[in-house]
Image (cartoon, rainbow, N blue to C red):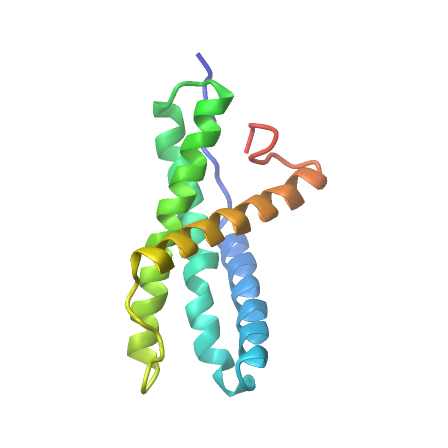
Length: 146
C-alpha cells in the first residue's frame, strides 16, 4: 500500500503563479482577438483554468489519489479523467463569467462538442505543464510522484 503525502504550497506562491499565467494568457488572447482593451476581462476569464485548475489538481492529489488503487495505470487514468471533467467545469465557469462581463457575449452555451473540446484542451494543458515539471526534475504526472 502506497502512503501518499498531501501536496502543500503556500497560497502566495499559488497566487503568484496562477495570476502570472492568467495575465500572460489574457494578453495573448486579447492580442489575437482585437487588441489589449479586453486584456483585464480576459485575464479574469483565464483565472478559471489557471487558478481553478490548481484546485482541480489538488482535489486529485489530496482527496482522490489515496482512495484509488496504487497501480500507476489506475492513478494516471483517474487523473486524466479528473482533468477532463475539471476542464468541462472550468469551461462552464469561463462561459458564465464571460456572459456577466461582456455586454454582448459571443459565446454559445456549452454543447457536447465544446464541452468535450474544453475537457481535452485542459488535459493537453496539464500534460504540457507536467512535462515542464518533469524536465525540471520535479515531481509530475510522468514520474508518478506529483
